[in-house]
Figure 1 (cartoon, one colour):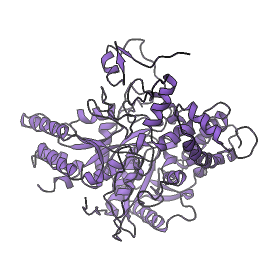
Figure 2 (tube, helix red, strand yellow):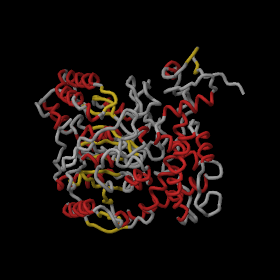
Figure 3 (cartoon, chains in turn cyan, yellow):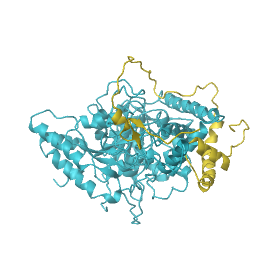
Figure 4 (cartoon, helix red, strand yellow):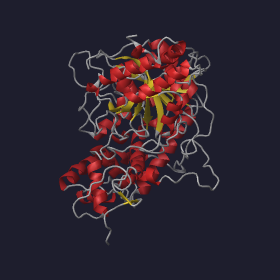
Length: 494
Length: 104
């Protein structure tokens, strides 16, 4: 039983049902790994008692002869952006330090109702703003991966779901929730050699998730296999009247319909994603990915997404604009921190509270958003960005007239050292160049491991699908997974 | 794309940064505001490139996935949770949120 923490979600689920091990044994094994991995700083709050509570409930139900729930016996990590009743929820900010929700987010509630247990609340970039997990008030998450050169530099686990990616690749949890606004599930998955899917905008309820940019935010699962992602996404998805953008559609049986046979499918390769100067190893991995999909029976066609170069600047107007509006709620009155200087009035209290409660990147984005929405600038920046966003979305519509899915790299590089890109916000933003366009168009997109670079660090491939066609995305992910044979894992140093 | 219609690149100065900070309700020191001038100029200079895109006849996107806004019965679906609402307030008194005196 020493290797329970190497099992996938599917293996835990099935092994529990078959009586190979108890749910308590699984929870204890993961709790022990979590407790022994403080050096990674992947968790803000550990909740071993919650994991055991769910496990014991699963064991009792099994002993009583009850039918198992979809995730009975499976413990998971919860990104600390999901409100969890009775457990501190911070969005990795000082602003929400000590905030203990009196309600449960829809997505986390669905997971607990399905029998999953909570190992803890996972660290992230503050308010999900960042690509390296260096903006958390509770400290950086350290990737479990190190360069093969032996320099032992602390590497970024990606962001914003960096606690999730680090914890899964280090076997602290078999799966976790993530959220993705511009790549926050896919880029950290790529950096740590795991898989993750952002479903179509509206599949997962946003209710109870700390808001960043509401027209972009989507929850999704992260795990080591495509099948595990399908299992979790089925539980996380579904209509929720409490989210006005929730799609009132039945949840497909993604797991049961998994198939890596891609005969009859056309894969589009967007030429704009291969700019001059693209990292040679990324380019070579992409070529291998194309061959794998051909091997699975797919036909490959070149497509054009002409507005690709405008996606990042569009995103960095729309996302900060929405953030400046969403984060206006942190006023020191209803929840979170309050900073009240001596003799201060209400306006002074707002300004002092927000100065003390937000980190530098959050302030930067709120201020950019405030500027682009301010009188006299709104049309030139925000309206223009929403028009370009429409063009970016139309690019995808036109491309999907010629193909069923797109294959691209997930990120322009492998993981980098912590601190390496901190000094220049713009250099950090460029990390999201391949993930942001699908976010702007609300499309399902998935990262799967494609191999290791010369330094021994994981690289990811991204599959982008048509709206609501998560099945094709997952199927192509499975075809890659079967052919990539990615078994690398970080050597334990923590 | 100058937002003022000038066609040249916009440039933000210290006064503008302080004004944005004030609109954002974030207090900044002079040193912080000065550090933000080049940062914000870099980012805003970079997003200026959107001005070169021809958007003639393009409607601004309002919904990324077509969806209907639903109507529901005009009925109370929530409420009677005052204590829960106030549970995380920095200062709550007599069943209300409490704030410093407002004297204009």
